[in-house]
Length: 130
Image 1 (tube, helix red, strand yellow):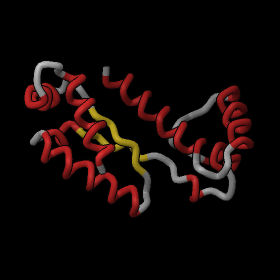
Image 2 (cartoon, rainbow, N blue to C red; image 1 turned 60 degrees about the vertical axis):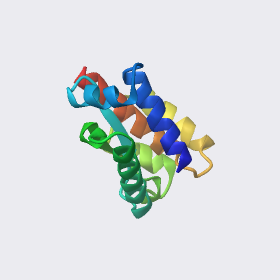
Image 3 (cartoon, rainbow, N blue to C red; image 1 turned 90 degrees about the horizontal axis):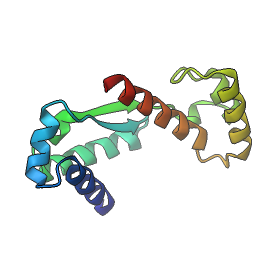
Image 4 (cartoon, rainbow, N blue to C red; image 1 turned 45 degrees about the vertical axis):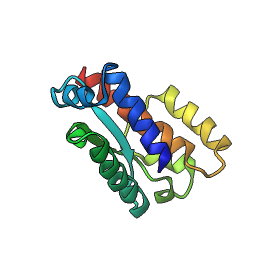
């Protein structure tokens, strides 16, 4: 979990470059939202719990700013094409659907299309918040 610590410290430092403690206070004022992409799997739940525990140890109150973005689990679909056609997370126009289908052909079964959809949902959520 050393990677989580590094990511968390970089995030907190970017919020307020003067101090890590000052950053958690800035998070509580609503000016910053922290989104974490997750899915409906036990492993994802463990990752969320681990991140929350470590984040609160490093900066108490940090997880109050944490918002979970439910993504899509590519294993819930028979193929990446089915994922593109049946997912309800992000509305896709025809051009985006065609691009996702092309991407799905290149997908090696590692969930790249599902990750892209989850990140797109997070960007939309962040834009709606700003």
